[in-house]
Image (cartoon, rainbow, N blue to C red; front, side, top):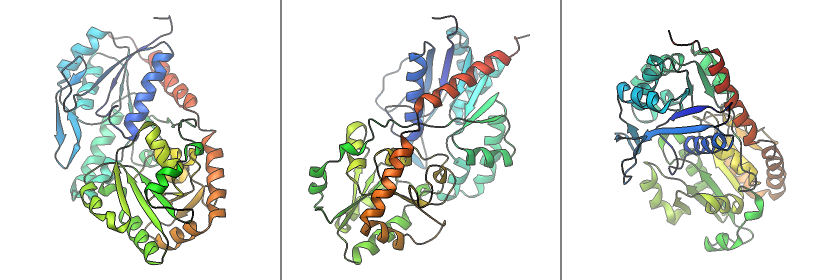
Length: 378
């Protein structure tokens, strides 16, 4: 280990091979830190089918979203882990029981704890019929993150909102995109033909969780209107979640669920589409929007925090007022190839400036700052 290397413990409820924006970001962060000479150990829930091994904690599925598993460990267990491994800094990426136990353990050992805010869980409560829990969730999240030394947030809008709610010591930690993996060159005409789409057909794409908080109803409704108006089109939903069984029954309407995709399979779906449709209003960043831009796709979305930092209206796509009807603009972009090409080219240009290197520079600097400012244990 070099003189300037750090020993970092990452605690998270989600991590590859899980496929979501948080897991992918953390996986890339670990790879980047290790490539820079740092030692990184991981504490996360053991997934179904995984054998027990160091760092994998017992887990239970979340009762209203069984694809998500929650880790179970006591602060004493994690104290022993952090002390024996010699952790110098702890990065806690999720606020569940595992993250809370790690936060308590780090404070007891006087190890600086950096947290990161990735998901608006307080806003999600209403989508699952748990509106009364929303206020309590906000109180808990604020107390959790304020107990750490620094909270990293993915976008300026998230930082501003959390700051207004009393969160302290916030810093923006943005995201990047792999512009080689996500590139227009991976367009696959055979893939389009397999969907029955000729030159005049339109492939509309959504990538993300198939879950209530993603607000997919306006998109589904507008797509049905588009088809009734005579346009040959297919809407492909890439992802998984509690709503997938219902959407899977809509194939006769031209709505296809293709499940989780990754690697070059995902890249081909992006590059082969004509338009990226993203109706979510609950994002802290919107990694998939950046991937779509890198793939040369125009964006249709609501003008909501997180997403509107990735898309400039009438430059990279169209942003609609929250709650408005998608049908007119979906029709416009589906028919106007010149407008799609213009927006897609601008999005690709923007994506080329969004480097993961800068993201990891910010993360590394945040760790070093906390190590330099942390007083020695009494």
